[in-house]
Image (cartoon, rainbow, N blue to C red; front, side, top):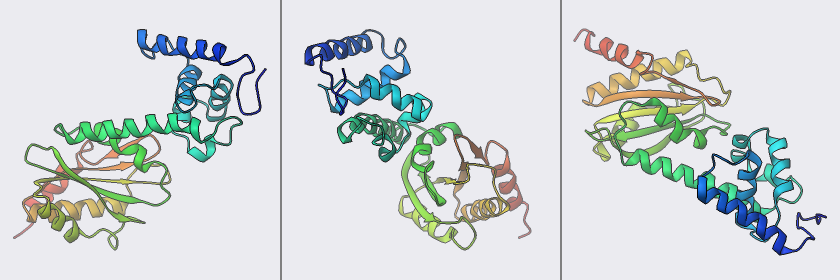
Length: 246
């Protein structure tokens, strides 16, 4: 029998034994042998270690369709599931934030190595749910290690919102030698607009004048992205600058 708040009338020993088995299963083999609902259950019990969360875990999986859907769900949506409260949400939010910190630390401690996928993985969770466009800049040193990440503009990304002068000013402040631009499309479609292309071209030109290198401009959509560098556009814009009449 399950109580209204998700508790179990079998007593703490029964629930404790089940949770102990889940933890031992994880310690022995990681998550490979886990079903998705068991992973969610383990996370939910982090905040309420004396509470049986199997039913809530299964309901969350039904509601959000997949493990990833649960992990990416907003806390308010999670709390709408009967038996899931603030303490249960703690485990899910904890793994979200630890993952973000891990990805950020990994990015800040190793060369960019021209991996657009790595930048996407790092920034996707921060940008995916935003209703407005946010324009971020990654400032890099001569070894292509990230010195700083900064959101410089919010709202529609167009020539009236993105100021190359402000970006170059910050590049000098951080003593950067290379730049990566990233912005999101709330529509979910990462294909760059004509405006995106024109802004990228202007930024490549401005960086060249300052003897800085633009490595990429990445547009993030719904679990997908467009990389100007991967499509050869950054190189094309750089060549246009070189061939401009002096």
